[in-house]
Length: 90
Image (cartoon, rainbow, N blue to C red; front, top):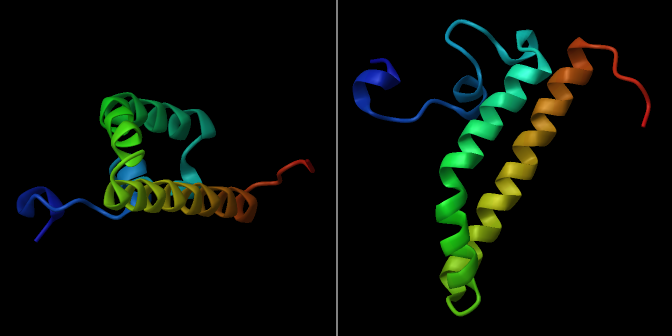
């Protein structure tokens, strides 16, 4: 059953992509726009989590895990770019 029907989230790579387009076919600008849209929506929650993390160990761990996962996912994006495009050094 498709994720739309179950209410479950699709994997990160597909979530970043438009329907029917894989990550290696997406221009960097489209990816950047998607990330900007997502970050705009979650910023209020992250602000609350950052404040709560100062006194709540569980929230601090959750926030750390989310940020680590975000960094790993950006690394995957860069790997896809480098595998399918010629990137300049630096």
